[in-house]
Length: 404
Ligand code: ADP
Ligand code: MG
Image (cartoon, rainbow, N blue to C red; front, side, top):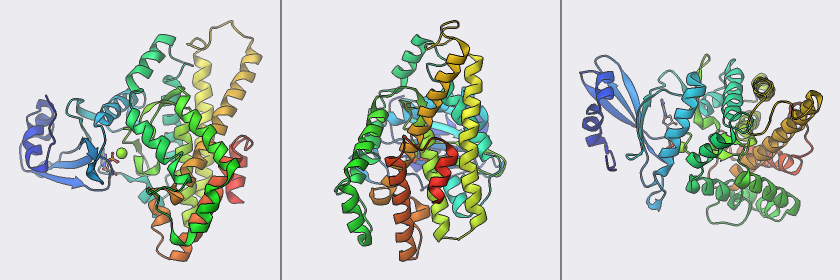
């Protein structure tokens, strides 16, 4: 099928003609609603009002949805989203929405409607506790990263994986520009709080900070550790108290181990900071920090456990090295993943302060003084993580740093 944009008036006919979809939805009255909170793509909820069956239709258009046709963006991104969702479905089927239908040529995916789940960013703003989230997301991270890495795959399978994902050039470039560059220099895309112009200027002139940004950007650009989601913020997670789902992996590519972990930690810290000013709820803030600790510890334990089950891979051959030396190697290896994650978390936090895309929990604080204070604190923590990413040695130290 050659590509066409499924406007709302032709969407119903188009999807009902797809056999599996027609059969899934069944006969009856269909309603279609557009969900407006995504940035890049068109997302619709389709519901059969008779039997209440529903699904999500997501299609990429050859431009950026929020900006319009004047901002072209290859719809190839949907190809990578489909591929990543399929890969995740094979590893962690309970942690991603089920795919009902996919068509790379149409840049289209039709998937399970997570009707009982909400976007995590919103849940965190409303101070909802998610007791299983750390358990779920640490499994997601450990399994998706381990099984797509050279610690598990054979050399040829790993290279085939890189081939399938690493032409996601435009979205990787967006990250290089917006996460690692433009938010840290004078640029017209920035959105600087007028009361913080002085702070922005002084940040833009800090050389140690900028050198570390370059180190981290270089790791982002060149390291091919494992398949990363590429945009794992709390807006890419839908959940309730019992279940968690990762959505929207259109930025997926084979990149650095620490990138998704860093993104997630950054967003949890932003939420922590926002509640100093939003609610002042200390108990909730403690829960956020404890969750960060559990996520990292859980990830590390699960990742190492998987590693111990697979002694042969592209990297390792049984008998190559004595066991205690191997343990030492693994320890350093995990240390490196942690440092990187801290550095990436810092970049993700700092870039949200002056850069194009702020986060609702902080930019949405109504009182302008409190908003400014929260932005300053996010900047301070982000900067601290970037400057010290190589010396913050474990998650307990990270949490101490945040508290301080
Ligand atoms: P974009 O790529 O444009 O950012 P997202 O994948 O983030 O789009 O989806 C936009 C919004 O659509 C999400 O914030 C969420 O509210 C909703 N959404 C996306 N996928 C699902 C799903 N499987 N079930 C329910 N809602 C979804
Ligand atoms: Mg998206």
